[in-house]
Image (cartoon, rainbow, N blue to C red; front, side, top):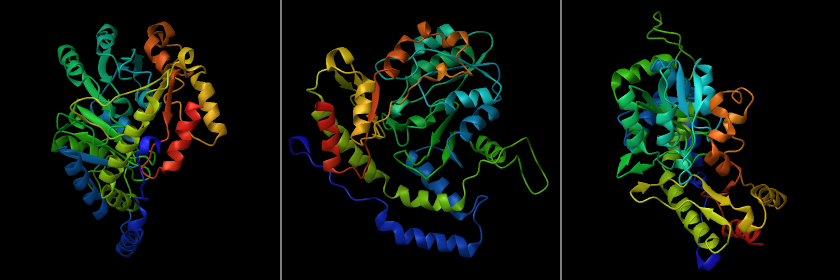
Length: 370
């Protein structure tokens, strides 16, 4: 490790392998493997407590919560969003029969620029869907002020924001609803999974109906729902993972600090610093590659790393607005989104995970330096 820092870790799941087998046996014996079983209920309660949110509804992945959030708020017309995100953000808008409207990002954070939101509002605008990119909080207060003034709903795609807090409060309580992903690549996962965070019990009840085909009871269907339930096996896995997430975040924090220390002297490589008053989860460590000062482009560095079996990710690239379904929308024009294009063409997320060894860390640094 550079400068005598150490990040030695052990796998967070191995100590609980026997415990997971015990839980699988409980599920097998109970014969209740899905449909709001005991492990599902326990995980909802445990996550709501850990995340400091009033109500939470579990889902089978992180995409269906976006679809349901738009449905339950009855969003129609235009939804202002960012082109700098994973495709599920905009796909959920399209699947709900709404029109995505892209606006540019703040180059300091990668998040949607509130000043650009205001200019994009039309009589057809009904909602804003911002994204907490890399778990960096959006300008929540500015977005709220705009939404309140124009009577718009706000749904936060908080896929990256597990455990992220601003001034001691969860950012998942911002907006009308927030959605989160528990995909295997996230700092906390249920293998595949996700959730919607809401403020009141009535909204949770309605969302729970919608994720189970609209069933209120055996013979009553209250609306055209979908199958979005999380099964008992992944709920049990999630409960065990929750026991280790604090250690995982602490370890990633050490790795992020070590990355910053090692990369700071390298001309043409920059990165995001921690934001005061924000509790980060260190799910990603993106760097920005300035070809003129670094000597090679982001893509050249990416391919160099691949040749050395170092799997970085150009995240997010390409931009969503360049996809065939969306590229012909007036808001998708490149000239409207200069900051998003600049970031998309220079960003590279370095490997970071709680099992990362000192040797693997040094391989990444050596590749970038040399």
